[in-house]
Image (cartoon, rainbow, N blue to C red; front, side):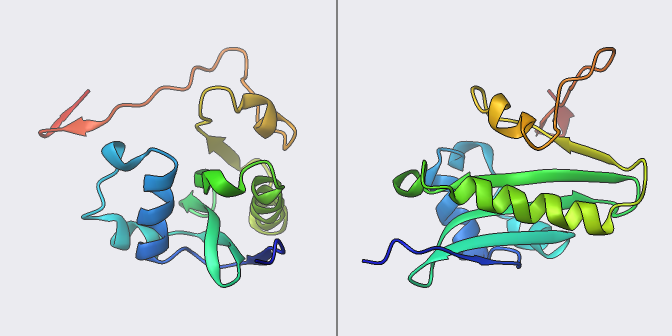
Length: 142
């Protein structure tokens, strides 16, 4: 089996998305019923393939002008530590450098323990700002 990876600038398909989310342990946190519509509203996406199979994905969501959020950066556990995440982040950051206007906000929620990986791309904690979020459960935000 080839170990070569191909970086493709596109949003993952629904099937790729659900498979990769499940592979990295996000299945219980994701609402796959609305994922297809969400994917179609992405600003930009990147998929890394090996032998035609998606082994990594990432995308940018937001309003495309002031706010950009890097979302769903996931690498199949069998391919982690091979530079797949680095290649995806380089593509995502390249898109932002080329397309985000001056003073645009770029956000990301990092998985615990992955903060150092994202810091190398200029994503940091900022004094005076606290990242906060809620999740809608039964029409309430928790």
